[in-house]
Structure formats: C-alpha cells, structure tokens
Length: 119
Length: 110
Image (cartoon, rainbow over all chains, first blue to last red; front, side):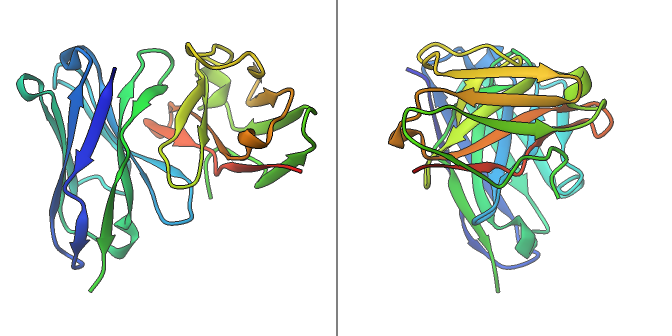
C-alpha cells in the first residue's frame, strides 16, 4: 500500500523558514515525479512545486518561485520542501502527492501538514 | 481567481445525476489532459478521473469525465449522500508552465 506522510509543519513568523518532509513507502519512489500542493484555510487547491524522478527537473508556481526549493532523496524515499521568506499568504495545509504518470494527475496524496505564518 | 472556472456549488437529489463543469482555455484544457479530484472536509483529495475520462482502479463507474474543446465535465450518476464533497478539476497550463486547478465545486445531495 502506498503511503505518503508529511511532517515539519507548524507556526512560523513572517520572514521565517520551514522545511517540510514527505516520507514515502509502498512504492518505488525513484520512479515517480512528486509534487507539493497546498490548500489555504477554506480555499481551493493550489499547485506549489514538482520534481522529476531523477532530480533533473524542478517546477515552481510563480507565487513561491525564488522562495521555495523542492528536493528529494531517493535513497531515503523522501521528498522535501524548503520554504524561506514565508508570508502570511503561505498559510495552508501542504500535501505531497505522487504524479501518476498519466496526464499530470496525482494518484496518491499524503494527509497534509499545516503551515501557519503569523506573528 | 482560478485559471479554471467551476461553479461554486451544485445540488441534486439522491439517485439523480449531476454534472460539474470546468472551463479553461487553449493553453490548458484545450491542449492538455484533465483530471478530477474529490475531497471530503479535513481529508486529502482523491483522484477520480485522469486523462479526461479514465477512472483509477476502485472508482465506481457512476463517475465519468468528458472533454470538449476548452471545457471538461464531471458526471456523477446514482447520487448518494456519501458523494457530498468538494470536487476539483486540474490540468497543465502550457503558458504558465504550471499545474492549475479549478476553484472547486461543493456538491450537495439533497
């Protein structure tokens, strides 16, 4: 069974940093591109960032470009999101998700981790 | 505003059919596959439809997807109270170089 478990969320002050992790199990992690999607309280889904299976390609939403950095460690079956210069509008539940490989769809999602940016 | 436009809410009676629309442009829906997700409050989204009209294993055939031009539609037949959830469409946007989602549609089964 595929499992994705996020961690690292919490309360951080504006301008601060946070590193999210996503531990994957039940899949050959190195074969899949992975993605972060966030959801602000009471709002819809927002794609944040994706990374290819072989580390070679990374993609970012304009709203986080230059502040967030996605990475992965295939040996540890883990995905990361380094978030710097955090703003109030970054407050959201952050989900990691597996790219299915079919039409930019995401077939497995973690339970999410809440990031709150507030003074 | 979301790049993809969905109605904020739809409703129908148990046993009936409902459709949820998702409108975009040539840079997204018009030239890329559409996927659909179901989300219950406090839980992660779940993939319902990928590549416009394909269902992952375990998704009942009550759920269907279609695409025409720059719009896509999710159909749900034989509505059940357990289908009450938020539904999102998503696709790649070739101009933005980003995955984009619709704003979501809340389904109420009356």
